[in-house]
Image (cartoon, rainbow, N blue to C red; front, top):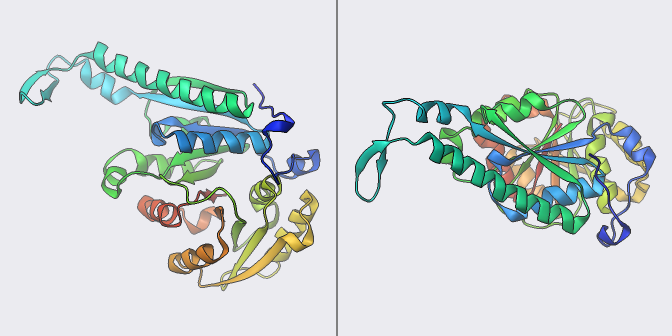
Length: 298
């Protein structure tokens, strides 16, 4: 499987990725966690567009919850049926049928958006733990996509906290999508701390592919030379010098980042993994939801 794109599918102002840009950034595959993105056509369209722009393989993964299937097969398992308020046995065939229907709808949706953009894709249906299955399949050349949508209660009580932890502990880059994206244009911002350079090549590659400026946010925690190292990577990828802008981010708190991103109209914010791996899953979700833009973790 390989993604492809015809010239008519490239958005105005976007630039086709060069071999040099692909060589600097190692990512080759985009893994879409369909269990944590829901049947959201806008989110799926965004993922398909990113795969097309970056010439990435697009793989959607749907995981049938093994725990639910195991529970439904137990003879004493019951469910409360509304509105009659009566208990009845769980039907394993009905549960499996609902999983199959959901994966079929998602397959149709992904195929439609990918076909519109000329992006090859496929879906794998697995049975296991929805919180860990996608991360277990990921590698260093992958980008995992999780949906940060939904209520705080749903995320804290559902499988999202474990999926988030598995994602940030995996070797893959992680892209969090909000339930509603504010805008699809604007600069790509990177909060530069330590070990920049090739670490954030993916963010620079996205800026190059979309024809947008690359904003380097320098905080009080940014190590000396990190901004220059990332600027060098941007130039090596082919981003013009006047398209790389440095902005001061102070303490780089969530409030400060929200103000900066609102002022710049950024379309995506890239953070380094150490800055978020100790945070609760809802903090990351709130950041993506508050900014209403994708948040990339590397």
